[in-house]
Length: 569
Image (cartoon, rainbow, N blue to C red; front, side, top):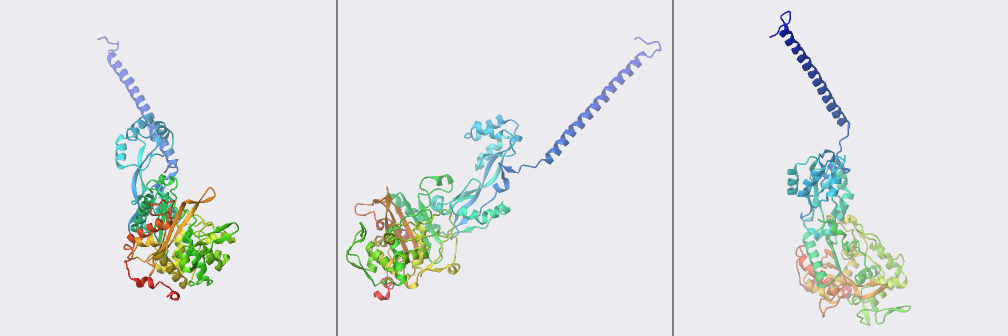
């Protein structure tokens, strides 16, 4: 080994090498410390920046706690569930957290193949906080998506409305949109009042709300819906409808209109002709309006039930003559005018009263204004403010004016309950709660006479076919066959038929209107007038629901005899 002159060569060389390595190590440590400081500084800065950014707590502008808001269950009068909330998972994305958009698109479409590639790519691209991908999925789909393990993809549990009865009470309940907000029927009415307020206050989020109890009896509703479906098939009709109310409380017991829709699929409500004909349809009611005319004339005192009217000849207005469909062409007593449904006799009854008093009575009984009612699907009636002579004549037997079936059933209830008008309702209401709301429209004596006329018509007149279907339940009523206007003229081949009824007339509790639109004859032996369809549907419904409502059959003649006014005995 070579040595330096002083003999320390190798030692000095080693010391120099150590110093160099020491300097390099210190330099590395300093650079590492600097890198760590910079790294922590960047992280700290980012944390400060994120802390200053307001967190996006919405999904496409909608607060997530609103999305999870609940609605109260809807029950019928017996506690049966008509509408309930169910909890369903909905898929959303946070685009700013998605690392690989193409991978996310590819994976999601393995579970949700119906999603468009371009649409999904656009949804997942960008700097948005939250966007919907697919709503109201099944738990099985939720599990499959979660197994994909895609960052920025997650679920939120929201409420979905479910209607166990499907279409049976669709026009009563209405429906909700995908955000669980009411868009039709009683659901919309609820949102216009209490439910929306509760949701805004946060009281409907994750909490069970008190059930909403309706006046509807789903047993009766089922029968009415079933019989209207049968009527459409049996008579090849284009539509049918019906409504039954408690005459003392105004509670709606059943209300159905066909064609209808499934509220579990709100889009089905957009199908042509599926509107609510009971409240949002107005029709010329035909001869069921004669009950109104008789009540107006009898209550005024201008006409007595013992009076007679000349129905030998038609009533002439200029070039036109109004005659009877099956005229007797003789002098008719007032009860005969009613049971034979004489247009001529009814016109004379109205003329004895006077057209102005007749028009005023229509206002008294609420036929020229909107029925106060919870459903938003309503139409105003069309009744002239003033009647001409011919206008009053045709109106007396239900032509030249249009009202809804709800108008008519409300009027019939007042005519048979002793003369008290009570607004209809879809909510439960006791008689004690209803009585302060009464508004007298006719005298009790007039109401008794109307009950007699309606029962007489069921026994001997156009309602006899109905009575055969409901023997023992003391039903009374009136037929109405209204020709439809086609190309500006009344068509004898296209009619809308009605039957207005009440039962049991010895102690009346319920009124009902049934409508069958454009029926055909069931057989060659039957016609297309209302007694053969709307009347028979009425009888079949009552025969089935009366026992449910606590009404027992009774065939005693004394019950009918007690309905006869003393002046006729």
